[in-house]
Length: 313
Image (cartoon, rainbow, N blue to C red; front, side):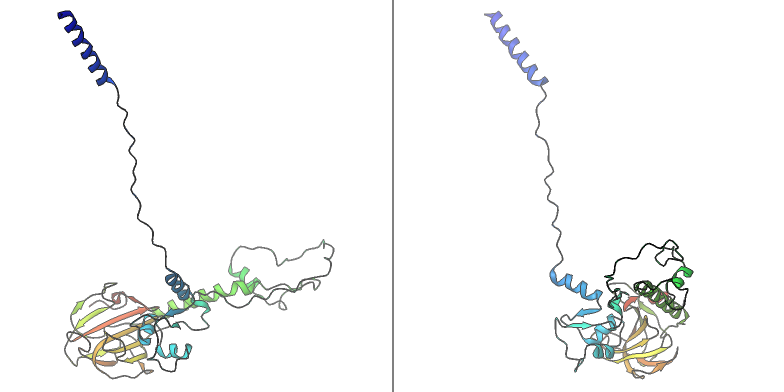
């Protein structure tokens, strides 16, 4: 009986040890985390992007023509003309407005004019000419001289031998980028020549913070002088933009303008030329919680940090 018990205990022990030494088969771990879905652009958002590229804007709730003009760095009177508006105060939600000049080539220097193609040559091709002098189809590396050669009128250079079919001038394609680059360079040079000064004395109580404050706020006393920070022409003088109170906008160049908000009194008129340091308004608290001047500089309609232009104080 004892031997049977010992044998049975030994069998159990061997079975237990075998079970412990066997590697268990574990189920594979699979990461089933579902990535967040990417929200596709709605048709209205896609349409608005396309309109922006063509210099168009869709009116949203709460928009005014003057605010739209300020956002795009334009004179609101130009928007009235470009859109044939009978009443500038009567614009509707979802109305599409032109915010860039009609001749601005869709806003990005894209040439929209039709390209004149050569007439089809129905005659049999002439036999190959052995002698070949100065072919205009030759591809040249970009240089000022090569560009000038391509832009040379047909009648001013050397003759190309026999008449043949009419060839489109490469200058049609090369001219727009050069013109756009020249215009951009001229605008930059014009901006660099501008001289700036602070529009009023006082303590800066709020600095530029993109998304929160589009300019700087200067504290002062009611009636204190507000002067033009640079020479230019008054593009707007009034109180048509909510949140700005009595506002003056001065255009300094094709790309730069300055805005002076919350004035008590405006002493200039639209279309008036002003010099740097000339008084344009009296400081006040119109549409504000305290007496202060809110000052902005906008480049191509986009608010930029005024400290980039103003001298150190």
